[in-house]
Image (cartoon, rainbow, N blue to C red):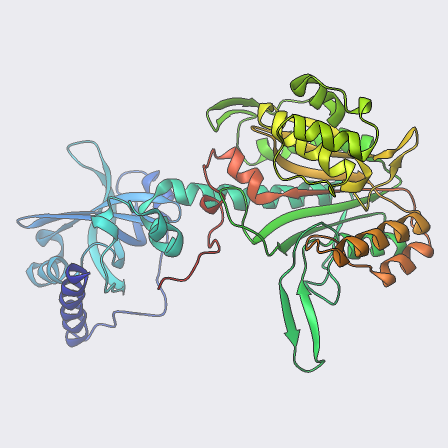
Length: 486
């Protein structure tokens, strides 16, 4: 910190020298003619005006070499007393340093070492920096600093910038794909009088003028379904969602997902759709379908196996859940298997889910569709016609059972939906903070009729984390949620 304060004092002296010379150190615009990438590809003797941040700088007598960086790339500039004159050369080397933004006018040439460079004929200060680049541009070693001061991370790490751009490209390609498939992008409320669409604990706030509590949405589902009732057949939203839950390498309280609904489709049609959509957006974002993630070789080439939760448990736990048809026998099995987080009041569906998590989830590597979940886990999904204890639902899982997508054949029977939401209310009254409140208006909407519909949610943060092989979700969220510094 003392070193930074000393360097800031030196830079302030340089700033004052620039001002004293009658130069504005923070002009409003530049006169760039070429990005650095275009300049680098230009022919020898091409006249260019380029701009960028000084990333390295070394002076050798009457010659100074520096590297500039802009959003397109890097290039070397050569600043010489011969080209500028003694005063302008001295001014450059004395008052400018790494981190400063400059505009340089000159011509393209190649050095004796074969490096394409700009021979500077003139320069303009664009922004004088008062603090140094992190560790003299050798990067940030402190992970906490990287997350708190992402701008420094982006300056010092090409990989951080690459991840940020990959995320942007993926979101763009997702939108392009859904638009091309005839979906309409819509916006639904972030502030809601009732939260719903997922089993999660919400953030609560207060509207002063209306004097009512409001909730940050945990999912856009119930509003998107209202639009299907209203006559839309294909809708999607790239939605910021908020869940007041724990933070770890795979969870952030604020996250981004795409959620879409498709009238007259079911979960089988959605699985077919995903097998076309997901490889398309990955390759359109210039990423490979085969890659390494969490030390495993992963292949997103379709098709993806469709395996029931029952089959996965049978494969890895060596038991058949259908041999335990009631809650009491399932609880006894869970205790026998030493499954954590269960008690005598845990429902049969939740017990099945905990057994799956304990024995099967971590064995998954390549993407699979896990299908047909217990009805208790999916209060908004349609029951299977051949076994109403389970629902038409799938999760796309990979690499340790990480969930990338969650999808249903949506429940459109208003009487069944009303009963399930009332059951959620009973769970809430019993102390379950992640249960879903009863939404009377949503039930009313269903009573007006919703056609057979399938819906899906895909976590964009988790998808990016997987595709760039990041070890923490914070690596792919530009400004993750962090506890304030003391």
